[in-house]
Image 1 (tube, one colour):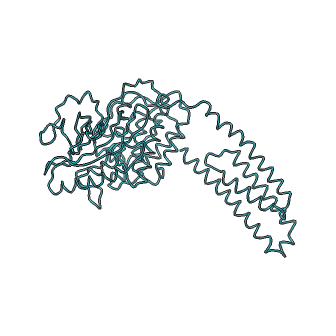
Image 2: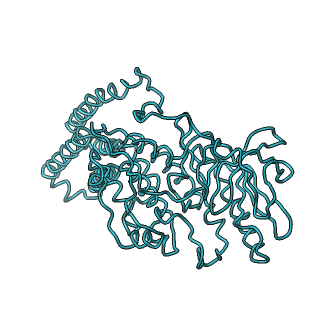
Length: 469
């Protein structure tokens, strides 16, 4: 992976590839002319290029790691191109789009490359080093990264290398996630039955989930890495400190992470719960999927931020290199808040939920009153059908965000029906004894209906509790 590097630091360099030939102005695939290098790392280089067919700027990643190598290199390049075609199918607003891929050079000098949209923005690593990141920013950006992960996981694609330098923030505040599946695709030692063999680590050790460190990643491994990223954003340092790769991997496997609030003052307990859940060693103890995590982060984004924000970055942690395709943003002052990146809400629209809430206060008690009136009509008229209909209505409207008024009114309706049912059984006991085929079917429908409401209430409460943590 290659780091984000300001263009002004790279544009005058005489960059050469492994064969000693200057790459600037080269034409890749008879179409993409390299203009200036934006980054360099263990896998190769990332360039700003000009698509001479469509006349637009693009980003080109030259994977020099897979150059040469004889028959083994041919196999690795073929697998890279095959897997890159799969990841290129991802289409999402928060995922950098892959336009094209191919190879350049001949014989042992062949090198694969990817062509992507050129994103004008900055990596989270650069932004966090420049000043404190607010909790609102961390929540909003984390939710958008989770949206991108949800899209990829639904397509059967894992990222395997979530870290700040692979997350870009555009001038409009949009999040773009880079390099989906690239770490896996560029592994020259990968085989069909094993993630990797000795000599190559797929991912970045400082953000690597325990199961991924063992060589068996799963979608929730990306959530663990995002937990490390969020910990770093809100505290200014990684959850584990280590001098080398082995130290990081050992910490992820054996050490318990500290609470974010113990590292940086002003971090609410809700953030502690969310981040520590992401950093659970057992994947089953984390959020079940990226969609649930996105909902939890959006809930935190609506939580008021305390007066004392997180401490500035510690400055001692060195982030592993990453591969990106960016141009720099103008400097951002340390006092920048999340509101500067978000559009201002329509003030008239903000009153709509309040009006709906006040209407609900009247609608539900009226429903209960109509229920009681229907009960007076007796079961021989419309009592039982109305009872069933009302309970199902209350069951259908229950949501994780339903308040105590909605739930309490529903239980009041259930209680009224239960009292009516007991009185009915006592009053018409003889009819029950001699007319079982007429009455019991109606009554047997009420019992499971009441049970369904109670089950729905418990389920939505648990869903609300899960999203809040």
